[in-house]
Image (tube, rainbow, N blue to C red; front, side, top):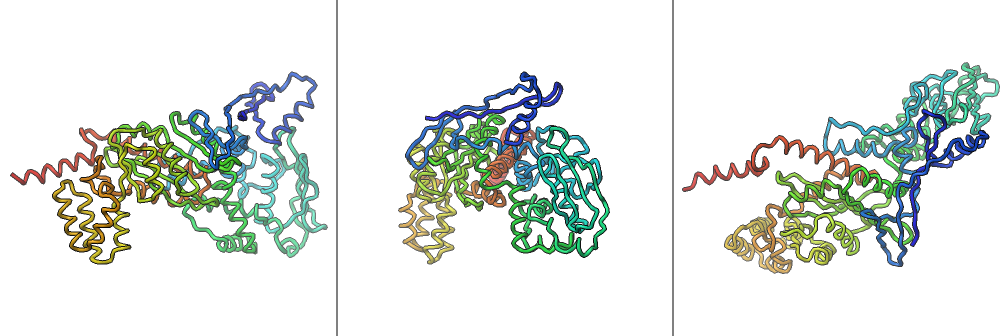
Length: 561
């Protein structure tokens, strides 16, 4: 057994200044330099905060679950700075959490969405950010947050004004560039401000005295990194189709740059990674994301499972609101899976139920490698900690054998019912004789409330195609017929609730794992808020839809004596 912990290191340069974090090699080097320049060894004490401590047990099994309270941690140690760089550094890679929330906004069509504000230190107004690169002027005295921002700014400025430069000197303290033409007087000299990472332009030669054909021949500043920075706003909408050919056309029209297809494609991939998150880095962040989510959403069930070589195998997420809402929902759980289209593939398993007003309440989401006995058994074990062994529990799904096996082991007292729509499709696929009439009679038999009605519709099927009767009996009538179900499955004859969730999440299936989880969390949050507001506006004894159903049935019944 090995023990690991997450540490947070902070120090203060001066009284009244906000604390600075040591989170990577560069910030550590800055602290060491500041410490070495001061002879007072008591200055700049480091505050060490232990955020979390957990133990990891090794096993020879393919998938091993590492427990820490309600979070199963698997990768130890992880690059904890990775997520901080995503959520606390808006000048670095595009904030994947903001993007996930924007995607969730599109999914629920919520025009009143307010973007999450990041807890970052404010920079002085005269410091140029990435977003300012297309509008800021090149003048003496302009400051840049760091050297990389300065480099990008100069590259964009060169592209816009159609000139090229070469780097004369570049180190952690100075940056000096000159025009490509040796006879030209254009140059830029910038240097670091004190011991900070900020760079300021100190000297500047603004006029080009070289010929235009020398300046405009080729464009060495149009690297894939620079082009990525120019086009990444195009990928903020997950439904946007922006191809490498589109990038080539845009760069030609807007900046007069002739890009190769390969460079356009690389620029696109880099832009997508910056906006939506990198697939590989996202797996590095997933453990810390779950830790932060648990801290912000107490009561949530967050689990992680990995192989012995620390590769993520399963991720389970159930928000605390799901546990609270489940108590007041019908004991019907619908389970389904859908393919993910990210670089690593996988399956997204969904479990959901319906509230009193027939609104969908997602209970849990789980990212697994594939639909097999092991993954479904792990998923249902985690789901059991949420829903328990409630009286009258009924689980509705398609006919996947792994679901059947897992339900029998984890929920032996629950009724496992099959989706009648899937059965109907199987009938259509394998039995062609009088197929439409058979399907109609099958649905009528499945929905029957009395044995007499059920027997009548089954007799109709037998007359049309006796082979279908054999098929339905082989499945087990208790699996699909409401009247023969050992539990009350109410109105839930299909897995449409989970299929609806799958349909809504179709646009985010290609996102990296951490971005995907955040988009799902935000989507569910918006649904919960909308349903709560609707419930507050309800003043009838029953919810709105059941009330209307009862009222319509009463009116219909009043016509009979």
